[in-house]
Image (cartoon, rainbow, N blue to C red; front, side, top):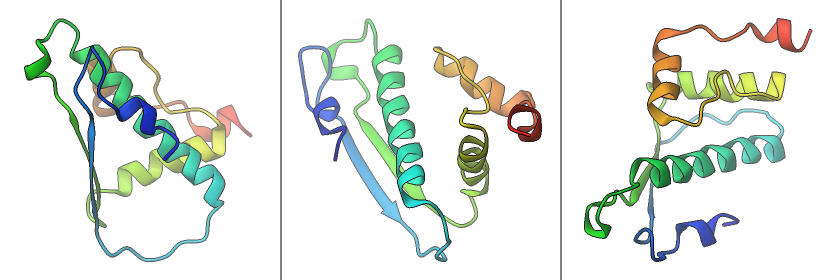
Length: 118
C-alpha cells in the first residue's frame, strides 16, 4: 500500500489500523487507475482528519482505526462522490475542517458537474 508509511506509529499517534469488510458487490466497468486514485485520496483524507481531530489528545485516547466497508445499500452516495470526482476532477466539497466537510455533505448541494466540466 502506497500510504503505509502514514499508517505507522510515530511520536504523535499510534499505528492506524485499516479494517476492511468487503461485501459481495457486482462488477462494474471503470478506469481502475482513476478509481484507485480516488480511493487513495479518500484514505489520505481520513488520515489527515485523524491528525487534525486528535490534536491535543493524549497518545492513549487517539483514534486509530479506519473502517473500509462496502455494502450495496450504503455506498450509493460514496459512488456518486467518486463519479463526481472522475467527471470533474474535483471533490464536491473541500474543507480543511472535517466537521465542516460533513456539514457540506449533509446540508449543501455541490456545483452541478456539467457546470464544472461541460
